[in-house]
Length: 170
Image: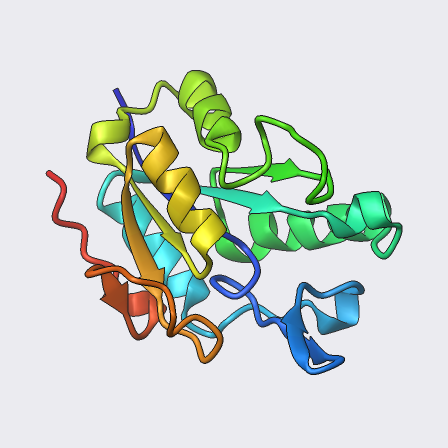
């Protein structure tokens, strides 16, 4: 069985965009900026024998704020620049009740089935309560990356930067 590190995308691997007083996912390719350390982290993860898999809610598709073709360009950058193993998206909006929408575990379960992943030997890195919920609901360990907007999230597994991910699961 494989081990994986599941990554949320926005706010974890790439910068969020500040608009209207809040942080949001980028809506165009020019605003899609990967964090400097993301490439190094993905390579380290893979060198340690973990799959690097992105699981991300992308409701701006359903809301009409993001074109699927632009999301596809962003995804291509994730494969080309970071060499991730796979990307799974939920493109539904918050009111939709879908198994793929975090905090439901659907994206993680879909990846588990496709890649033969041992969830007990895997972890999720995220920046929101929805990420934390998806990890809990899937039975994987959760690591919160600290950001200015998530100080209210209660967890003992908090890291200050992406390169601090503890790969202590073996």
